[in-house]
Image (cartoon, rainbow, N blue to C red; front, side, top):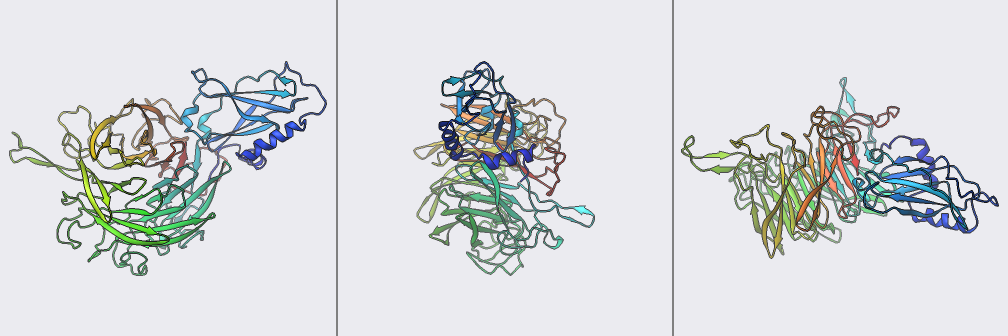
Length: 609
């Protein structure tokens, strides 16, 4: 993990003052004992000197010079500067002359323009406040990179593809980042990360944990066999103790749970791996494959994952699979979804789900989302075709590619029943179903349609269309019936942004984060200027919240080191509590946050808001 500037100073201060209750209690204890500068009387007319701020991941470190006679200090925060929210004290009675202020309990955009003031106090009262300090919020954006050495062979650099998959626990304190381009030859947990050209794109998953306000790498996880883009997809249970990693390019001929991993005769068959954490230590629990009469190559099992909140129901997408009678006899690349269940620590095959409208190349299972209880499953088929009625130019009618669809299924025992087949209202190339996000209760569904066009005539019938900004549809379920709720669009929309390419939703379904990895502005950080389109494929993310029945855009998010072609928001994850947002930029390869920092990884980063 790469930290932001002022690294040495921040590390020294953080060793003494962690983001925890311990520091506050210690401060109160010192205050009660009459800490500070002994018997000197406090000058109530003078504010503390040297009041300044440094930065950590979603946190500030305030420091100042000791004031003669002070027994403690009071720090106040105005959360929105000149806005309507009132100023309030934070941190209690602070005895040391520094204080680590965590922003973990809110998304960073909620502290745009926040200002802070400090005053010194003794038993008789407090003195004058300092002038307000307005921190640079961009410098509090977390920045994670692969810790493994940059692969290099044949005179060229490889890539970690760090951030292709990203997942957060419900409280946002565990972060899993997939790096399918990792090239080490190790297996299992915390092995040697040194790259090898022979195992290029074997893949890895990095796990980070926030403990007492500090983010640290907890594990470096590899597949138990050679893998194959291991980490292209990742999923976490609500408590963060169950991790699933997909490896859609894995090539063994195994079947079911914990089969023979050594056979490598079926290229791109795919696999999924389950890991469990116990008291901070990770171990592999299961190696999962589809159960088919004939395991076909290029089924890419593991291309999508969905894990229930308790970590006991797992759905795995197999979008290249023949969709029919378990044999290559019916629908070519129709796709399927395989469901597995855990009882204690044993995983078993539960069911296989296919589309009721299966056609060639639908790629059913490209995206998945599951409710917290594992009883509602949403499946994306973004390549499903649509048929346009005959007209003067096309008397026999015509098919439109990649209109897309999203299917909602509910479970009764081992049986899944289709509850709804959701499709865009107009037949055009929308790629509807490219991304999905489902609330914990399963009643709110967001569907990404990055090919959506707004009032374009004639409507496009094949990709790409340069006037397609993309959109997100939201749907709501009531008494088993689904209805469209709204369309989410950015306040300022440009051509071909890919808006809706990725999605994430809070547990209550009232906060939605939307990725637009082709967005082109040169803005940096939070709520910058979106109008300078000089950074091609820089990417952006947008945050929307629901108030009553109305949705509104709350934040426009960019990387802290925006550059062209970094594909910011190619993957995105939001904690269930809605307070932590991870946004991946798997093509980012700069070290712009600190030019003096030695870059030990390449190809991707993840930002935390």
